[in-house]
Length: 348
View 1 (cartoon, rainbow, N blue to C red):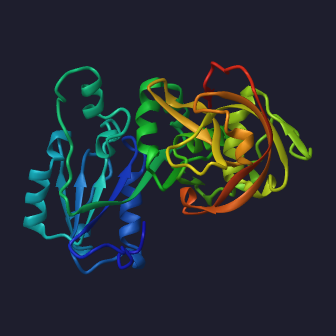
View 2 (tube, rainbow, N blue to C red):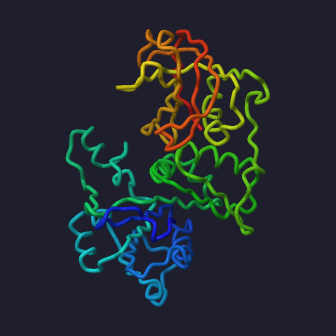
View 3 (cartoon, one colour):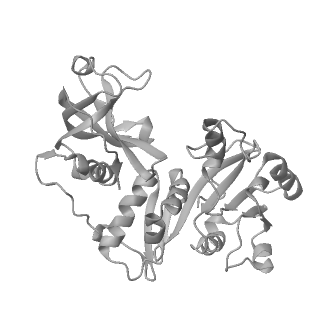
């Protein structure tokens, strides 16, 4: 977690650190370890909201040592502005930690695609509950903790995968612990699926010896990376997209050809568009558009509209872009032609 003296927030705003994961994934161990680190210690009060009770507990002497007040949240309905404001007035915290219940709908915190509020609106009914944080609370950092020994079960179960997708959607860091005894193939599979669900999350894999170096986990790519021009089959798009995201240096200056749907955002420059594919990252209800910005001569793309399908060839480079908050992959169009739709979404 970020150092406690480097929040960079306006006066009166309280940073909220959200630690999520399924029961017994190791959330409590992670929080206890982090709170003991010098960079995270604070003289002010930390309000710790516990949304479930696991086997590992917080002894009172531990809480006292680190100026922490723990409050048990037994029902998701308690996460409302009125009750949380009462806790803030009572304890006057400097920061808030939330140990999230992995079986609660985290999309409710962000008005995500599967939030109760949006689902109720789609179904023409009143929401059963609505989460609302105090206006002064800012979701500062989201960290997902996963147990490598049970992760396959969660990824292969539709309901559990949907909950995991909600937890990863806005995560900045995902730690998969207890990876001892897992094969390289399993770890590569975990990496691919987690990166698809949490595209902004830095991924750390751990065993008893510590962090597993991911350079030692090369993925067998379904195309020739050494070729000057890479031809992507429809089923290769997802793997290519993630590998470019994680290893852009491999692709600099290379040429790639693939079929994709055209996306032109409102107020987008006339020399830019986004070719991409819809992807089912965790479940059928949660679809994401995966694509990189492509630059082109305006005349080459003026006849194409959003949702048109095209076969294109482009070279790959890197540019500073606001979408990346820094440098990221950009395509430079060489040729484009209309083509038929690919009905099947990308899956991982």
